[in-house]
Image: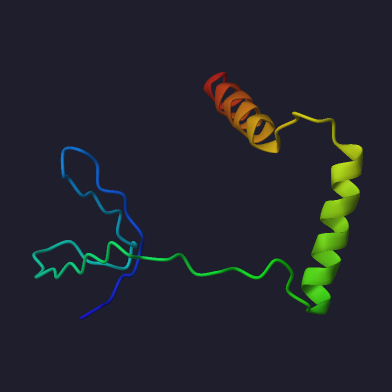
Length: 91
């Protein structure tokens, strides 16, 4: 038996779809749903004081100073992915 804890949104059609981790084998399962409408997300601390997190926060601060407003690393990564995929097709 495994417990998978997640937060979901239930739409107007009252359908629930769940993406399970890859270590869950294909097959039939008994599933128990606990619907807690008064769910409150866990509070994430604004700053975690460890040497690693302090270093990461300093790097993030420096990067923010050198990046143009509106620039998206995600868009760049998607563009690079498409270019790489297209270059493999030429082979």
